[in-house]
Image (tube, rainbow, N blue to C red; front, side, top):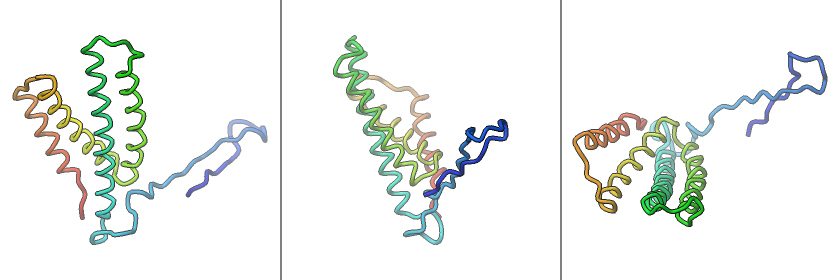
Length: 153
């Protein structure tokens, strides 16, 4: 745990004027346990992907509730809208844990890919939405991006 360094501000001469300089080294990216050949630990990748999946599932459920509310012309204070917003807030906590084990780029691509696939499936099966070549190409690009950003060494 790093503690912030407190110094006097160079802009004022008052002894009460303090600024906080926070230096933070991201220690979470290369944790030393269970490393695979000196690279990023496999357990970290699995945990990061697990938290990304949990985050995506929570967001997708929130999206579904908001879509039902929007299609049903429900008020902003309806149960569906409030539950969807609450799920979004909960997903922020899971996102925090995902970023502890993955780089932001990795977590972002995994989350986006999982969310994209799930929302496409929900749109197709639950709401009867149809897809065109452009949507299929977008899904293929998302899957390719995930494969390219995975760092397993």
